[in-house]
Amino acid sequence: MTRVVDTVVVDDDELEAYLRPRDDGPELPTDGVPYLPCSVDVLLRMVDQAPVGASDVFVDVGAGVGRAATLVHLLTGAAVIGLEVQPALVRAARDLAAGLHLSRVSFFEGDAIELAGHIALGSVFFLYCPFSGDRLTTMLACIEPIARTRAIRVSCVDLPLPPCSWLTRDPQLSGDLTIYRSTLREQPGLGEPVFDQEPKDRTVEQSGVVCDQRGVMHEGDARDGQIEVGLRASRPT
Image (cartoon, rainbow, N blue to C red; front, side):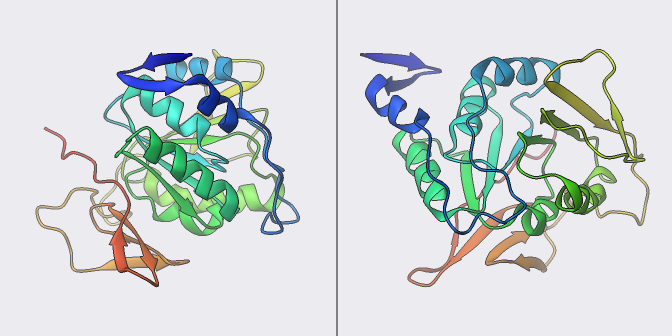
């Protein structure tokens, strides 16, 4: 059977293949959490409560095979960037996005601690227990500069965040879904504006990924040279 999701025709057998549990590879850090698919119910509540809209850039930290990131895009139209450390899961996620012809959904291989802070356009960061402890604290410190340029939301499933002075928990939510909202004001000198009049001639490189000043992410490829596989958000009107 096939079904139509936001004008995309989805074959049930193909979709089921992406929903099956996947074995974790040796690239998973010792303090990382094995791949577990997030329930659709939680994703629907998160999209509604965060909320996530077409103007957002949704960052899935620990994207797995890409099912959550893909669904969020189909539901909202938001641009999506998935971060995943396991190469086999990244390949599966990219295959899923390519099969559905989703040009605004991209997946990057690497440690989220090294990559998350370079996604300058991220507005909603989603964490379904990718890690905890020191790694979680480090990742939050990496995305704090982004919160100094715009309001961001950090949506967590079964993952309470450590005390963080620049995030406040949404008191209206309880249970498995928690949403934190940034409280930092935009201050000159603390973060460059996301949209300059002209793009600066500068890039930030980390683990083979390049994010230019407009937030367009690129990934180096030994066969094809430097190729763009990322997202460019629309300039606000």
